Length: 164
Image (cartoon, helix red, strand yellow):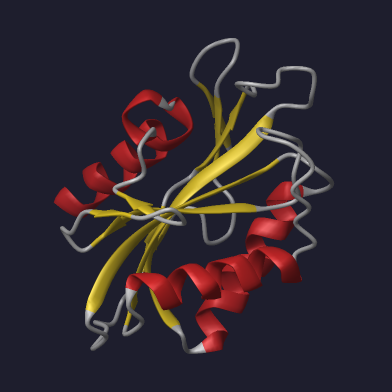
């Protein structure tokens, strides 16, 4: 199913997007991940990512948003992006979670050509519990989340669903 929000934004309701876990996780940390991509069949890749995360044991998937199709920003001469938000629980610390996320991106053939370039899969750590981190390699909360519809719209769906 899809829901057109306006001429530039469309929400897609696919298998596992949105999702809400039926059982509680015993892992320590709650993390919000932003995912995106615009190379190849991104929606199918999101399904594979979801199953990979669920089966891998490193994280427990707690919930996910619908998938938002939206225009690129920064470098605009590329296809529209698909984005979603996934809430997970993990026992990893932020530094090790970043290593894990980068491994997952590589597994899904992420190539970093230039800033804001087309990509198969991008995974951002938006929030990690309620902590703030600012290092050369990692900034949490994500510094641009408040200005990106690609985060705000999917995140709003998770928040709204959590209230029900």
